[in-house]
Image (cartoon, rainbow, N blue to C red; front, top):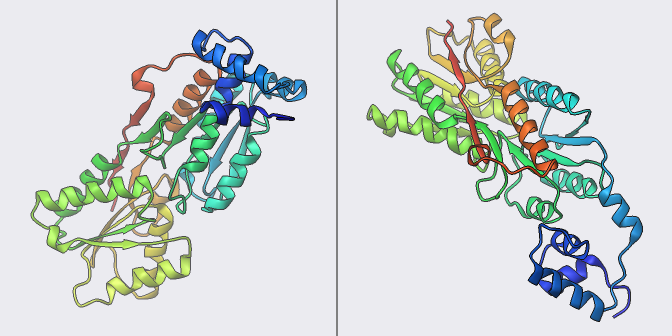
Amino acid sequence: MNNVTLKQLAEKLNLSTSTVSRALRDSHEIGQETKDRVKALAKKLKFQPNPHASSLRQHKSNTIAVLIPEIENTFFSQVINGVELVAQSKGYHVLIYLTHEDYNKETEILRLLKNGRADGVMISVSNTTKNTKHLQSFQKDGIPLVLFDRTCDELNAPKVMTDDIEIAMIATEKLINSGCKRIAFISMSANLSISKRRVKGYRQALQKYDLQKNAVIIECGGNDAENKKKISKIFKSSTPPDGIFTATEKLAVITYEVCRENEIKLPRTFKMVSFSNLPAAALFHPPLSTIIQPAFEIGKEAASILFKLIEKKTLLPTEKRVIIPSQLVERN
């Protein structure tokens, strides 16, 4: 066989390309039996390492990449502040990529990042990401990867998030204890991990107070006009909600717009709470009660874990799944 590549060699051995590469370099991380197998097949197939590619792999870019679905959400800008703090202390630069909630764009960015442009990657997946094949492929190439906020449970990678289930249950209970009996949860895409966790907390609270028959979940997407129609529709039903729980600050803003346009009075007609890190929520009319996520801390912790991977340090069991609590701030 002529011009055998490292990838072809790995496929024949049923090993990752990074394992084969380390075995050929006689790395101490690889067992002797595996090294012997790799070297034997390489010799048999007359495999010739590419010295240019090898030098690229050994070269440090002193850069990490952060993939986020959007920049409008205050949460992500605060996460980046936390990442920057850690990266600067390590003498690293941060590349920020926007996926715009597009799975194909997310896949393409990760493909481009395999060329050595970044030494490690942090990602919060898009709401159209329904499988993790592209992330698994990225991991197989031996590039450090950390997920934050929007994670994928099936992926064996470090994850940093907040206590979505617990805080969603607490927020729903607050609405119930304020007299709400028909609480609508306005959610993001149902396939997102954070949507599943937040809906679970909401349902648990309703079940605790025997209100599960009144559950109303409105799934919204990336089209603001369509989201507005969905939210308007629930107020026109024969049994409109007396409580609203929105999963993001954007959905909260749209709900306020619907109320203003239809002269629905808050909190006289219904009460409301939302996930939001927007400081201006205190200036809304009336001021909005919010669940403030520890965005800066999430960014800082995720970046710290990423650098441990880059530096080939062993992670503690507690660093493989980190949950940092959120805070409910009650306003009018």
